[in-house]
Image (cartoon, rainbow, N blue to C red):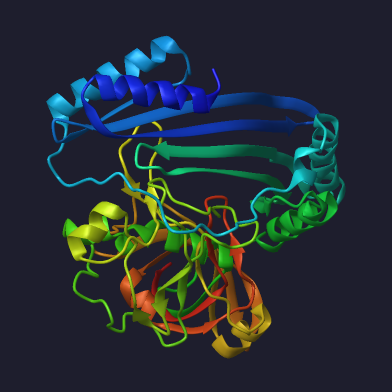
Length: 446
């Protein structure tokens, strides 16, 4: 059944069943994934998924239900289950269904060229990526991961207050990881590429970066424990930011789960730090013209020149704080409304990677951390993470370093950013950062 016809019939039957305000949220997605190993296809999948979420007010309470099929039986199913949900677990909190924004921005996040790439071209690229990595150096023993994946999706939202909007996007990523060996020293190196511009997926360049990283780590040793100036490479900085981004959610603040409570308009970071949430970023990984409640998206500085300017809000948290929603409502098909960032990133500076090293003089570059889920506490901000990277002296890399742990506090880290690189990159979730020079972190080594 056509989704708009389905919507009309669902709202008609919902009204008969006693619902007042109602909303339908539909997610259609298709995904392709290919993994090769040793010149053979190791994993191949192609999927298409539709999810339909329904919510509505019944006897003053919000009820939820979802299905994957748009037919007559599903209409009955959604209404009966949403009614039961409202009666049993529905909240009496004022959870609004939104009538729509006055206007919506035009967001570019779909590239037709990517959609036209054939399966054969994608497979050839992935095989080439593995082959390029294997031939670069005899010390490359295997390519342990060689993955290409892409997908496109469409979001449709409509409600009984007159809101009706849809949006389409697509994205691809590839990842290559190599194992290198020299004598008894065995290391890995990897490279991730994310975007929806197929022309920027260069197998030779990606393989070269992964191999060079692996080789540069051979014969790594630990280092004396102490406090060191640190350069967090862009990907590590993004990993840490992504782990702690929940502290900027108004929901966390209102529940007492963020130390940023009561700190709006206060300085919480170094003057040079500006943290943006930008759903309008052209071809951004998480770009969108509206959020899961139909609120128009807008770019906002969460931190501007070190000052905390806003939390991320949905309609419920915004009403509680007496402010406007920031357009950061998020929902899965099977879940109620929450809050999530979009393209969430620290604004790039004007210093090259080498200039960061020269400014640091002596210290450590961290290029990978482990244990973010177990070694980081978003409530306190504390983290203790296994790490590896390089020892730097006189602004030059001297040797690789491993078997170390870096420890600190996220809120202190924001205050101790000394310089910011120009090398902004995003991970596959839409969190991004340039490389950051940190005044110091505690390092446990030998």
